[in-house]
Every structure is written in structure tokens, then in C-alpha cells.
Picture 1 (cartoon, rainbow, N blue to C red):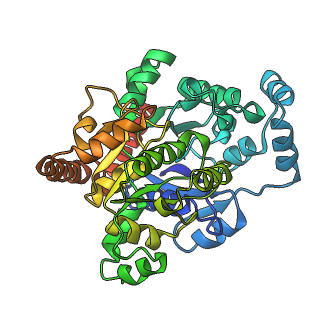
Picture 2 (cartoon, rainbow, N blue to C red; picture 1 turned 30 degrees about the vertical axis):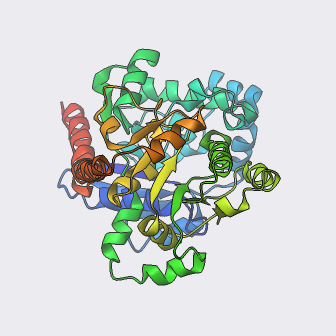
Length: 399
């Protein structure tokens, strides 16, 4: 009898933000074939189940009234602590038991991992920003800090394996949380955008790009959601330096949905009379983003959250010179050779490096970054790493 492995999928095709990124991971896992196990996708929304049911074996976890009431109370720290203390049975626990899953894979850090009951699970931890970036409101409101901290500590103690995207998170989990190294597995982010481009190379991206009215403009791209920790303010400060030095070589192109800071950014652009230096497109679809990458001069990412982010690897793939926050990556990490580090507290640092960077070194850097991408971010590497973890679980369970 085959082992039954569930993959929790929380995306919604009607809310495309990270949907296709998660879908890619789901479908790659489903490509792993074995006589010892089979996958089944757990969908959290009806639209998702309808979208996936003909592509992969899937089951809908009905978010009934009991589930909604339970989750409503979980938004209160007081009631959350009561559910933990008295071990109330969550509807998800009953669902897992009813379907006899042997293992659950969480492709993202989801609170439902705490309700797997006695069923083993594999968990993803992308960052511990809440531990380092507590001044940002997204880590404080609605007791988010404590929720994230509780979830991470629970996963580190209970998960069979923790998947992390880079060496720094791997190190931090060992040093800060005293996690056993044997529990950790490094798997770089596999961005969806390059895969889409590979399958649609003949698409007319120049026609799409024409919509942006950026022809003949050299632009610096920053594709990031407008969260406070994404630090779009840095670009305002750099643009002011451009203006003071009468530099008009580049403009900044920003794209990403608003999570609270867009109004402030637009206001500052207007107040400092920087309109000629900015184009803001908010949410763009995947093909539009590809067209922006293809036509950009470089990518600037002054984020205060990481260590790594999807645009880093997308930049590597599209051979775009990347300026990236220098404090996010460990000094001995080979990633440091693939981008130009910038001090995100000092906009002059970017300005100086932009105009004093050797062109030959730039070519060498983007080539090295593309080679890194091919070696670390391939579909094969992703599948091999997950298969290795699953086989470890099978061997222990059989033993």
C-alpha cells in the first residue's frame, strides 16, 4: 500500500499574487513518481479545487462554520492561548485523520501546521524577519510577532524536516533557535517567471512592453509589494541625489500591489518634485513583468527583509545587474559575488557604486549569477531535494 502524502495549497487563481509561484512548486512535486508514495493536494478554497482537480489529485478542505468560528477566535491572542492550553481539536486535525495522510507538506509557512495532530509534516521557513525587524507594522499588528514566533517554534520542534531557502536562515535557525542541523534542508527559491518565459519565448513581449510607454528610457526596476520593510523610501532618497546632481540617465520603475506604503511614496514623489524619475504601475501580470525585466537596465532591491527574495533569482536568470541590501547575506556566502551590495541606510552608497562600477566586472558578475541560477534553481534540483527528504521519512517510518 502506498504512503499517502498531502500537499497543502493555499493559493487562489482569482487572487494571482503568488498563486502561480505556489502552483509551480505543487506541479513539480507531482512530477515525482514512486511506487512507495502518492500525492494528494489539499485545497483551502473552492475556486482552487475547481482549478486543480483536473490537473492533480485534489481534495477540498471545507471551511465550514466550525472552521470559521475557530479561526475567528484564533485572531485573539487570549483565545489562541486557550486553544493551545486545552488542546482543542481543530477541524483540520479531523480532516487529516479522516483522510489517513502519512505526511503533510506545507509549501508556505501556514498556521494549519500546528493542527496536524499526530501526523508528520514538512514545513517551509522563508525568513525570521519578525525577530530582527520588529519596528515594521506588518510584524506587530494583530499580535503578528507572537503568532509568527509560536508557529516557527512549533514547526522547529514538531516538523519532520524544515525547508529553508538559503545558508543564512539555516545558520540563524541553528544559532537562535538551537535547531538540529539534521532537521534542516536548503532549497533555493525556484521563481515561476523564468519557467513561464522558457515556455513562451516566442511571445511578443515588446508589444506588451509598449503598454508602459517606456520606449528609449533607461530604467532601474524594483519589483516589490509596497510593504514598509521593502524600503521604497530608499529610491526616493536616491532620486533626490539624482536631481541635486542633475542626473537624468535613469528612471525608477516600481511595480507591486499596495500593502500600506504606496500613498506615502506617491506623496513624497510629488512633494520633492521627482515625477520625472518615477513610473509606478502597481500590480502587473506575469508577462508584463517579464517584459519589464527584459527591457530594464538593472534591478535595485533595497529591501530590509530576506535574506533572499524571488527578484534576486529572477535578476540572475535574466542577466540583469543586481544591487541588493548588503546586510542580508552572510559575508562568506558565495551569493555576495553575484550582486553589488548596497548600504540601505545610505543612498549615496548606491549613487557612487552606480557610476563607478567597472563594465567588464558587470559582465562577469551577471554571467556568474546566471550560472549559479542554472545550478541551484533548476526544477531537477527542487525535485531531487524533496525526494531525498521524502525517502528519509519513508526509511524511518519503515524502520
